[in-house]
Image (cartoon, rainbow, N blue to C red):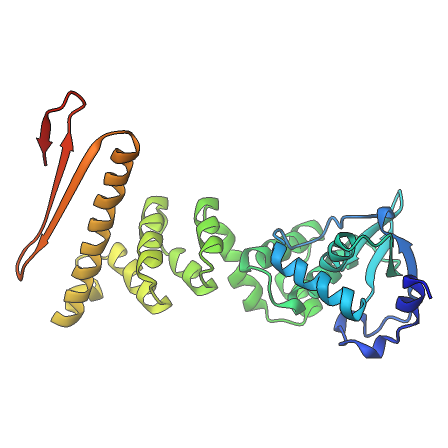
Length: 292
């Protein structure tokens, strides 16, 4: 039996149900993969290669448990739901894929794409926020209307869209370091990019919790009356140690930079009860020494 026959004869009840398919009764058909173009409303911006490889291996072993969903385009078909499945099947060398062809307009296509990805729960918060923003703007919906259509709260939508006020540089760091939505919301209190980046540096270096991040932001906003000023001695000691660690790391990074440029650099570090001493010796190109 051909691969497509096996796939098309598989009962849908064999696989996990996807709520996005619950009300659909269309017939699954085999479509040539090369005729299916990317969906213009795909909210996911990054596709982890390792996860795609795992999905491809699962499909190879168990078959494709859920068809992709497409709509007819000017040429061929446009993908609505199933970007990861389509990519995995391409990687497996499939020429056709089980698909449901839906007759939907742009708004329905955008909503279905976002809902399907939200159910996967592995989108980053900024991808979700941008998906909400696009639906609101392109289809002139209110936040309440969108919340009703997606089955979520209006506050959920508002909180995520607010995160789009963060500069791109800040968003990139939050995404790369896999910080939480609440870390991002704490940074919104700082209007200055430089301060946001300074706080982020501390958050990443010291693995700060959301509460610690909020306290750090407060100290930037009101340094004279920040909580840090009222901390117990033990807490102040911990902050000093963290600041010292940042300083020593900066010195080491500078040393590495000088060494990579060809200079001969020696660093001596000594510590006693009251003093932490760092002596940096840089040899001049002509052979002399300069101490700092």
